[in-house]
Image (spheres, rainbow, N blue to C red):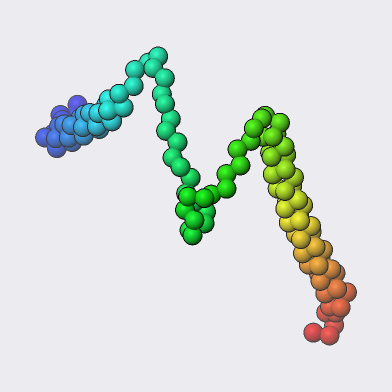
Length: 115
């Protein structure tokens, strides 16, 4: 059997030290959170940035008053997304049809005997 050289021992020792430092760093990050199981976490919401730079305190935020209003908003957004998707699909289809028409026209006009 081969004996373990001084370089191998040094590499193993450095690896263990680096691994230990990584574990200590991760432990400290999680220990700083000060959270105990069973305790509810509170989420602090920040104010949204104003859309208009001229009037920073007067942004228009519509707050839905019921679940039905939220459902209506989601349905409206979905229908807008669907319309955009259909428009994009129609444009892509027109491009494909014009490309295929060009290929068909090239195929009918190309004559190997002329070239």
